[in-house]
Length: 112
Figure 1 (spheres, rainbow, N blue to C red):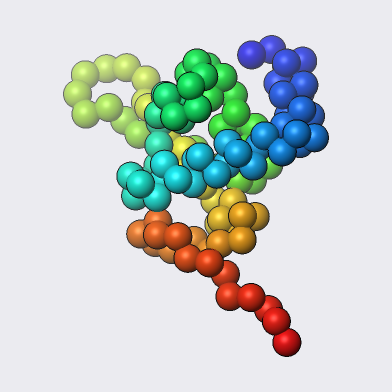
Figure 2 (cartoon, rainbow, N blue to C red):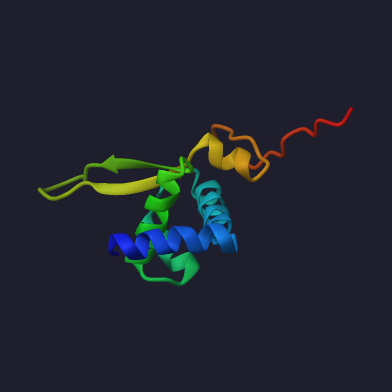
């Protein structure tokens, strides 16, 4: 995606709340698998192409909501695979706290 399109997508997602939906899907997939996910898994879940999913995850990364992890393939030469995991900030943005095993746990309310 070009820089202009990337900036447009970020501005649109902020105004539309789309980034919350993408973040919510990232959190769901992360909880389900209990490990970081590949952008193609997000693409399949959102029914978008994998390049768009990658760009969406990179936009979440720039906002501090997703963290990439580069994993070497088991055998042979080639590039490492990039996986993404939600950051603690991502969990708190949606009103949850992160736990090590990825289970959903609501934040305690701060009622007086």
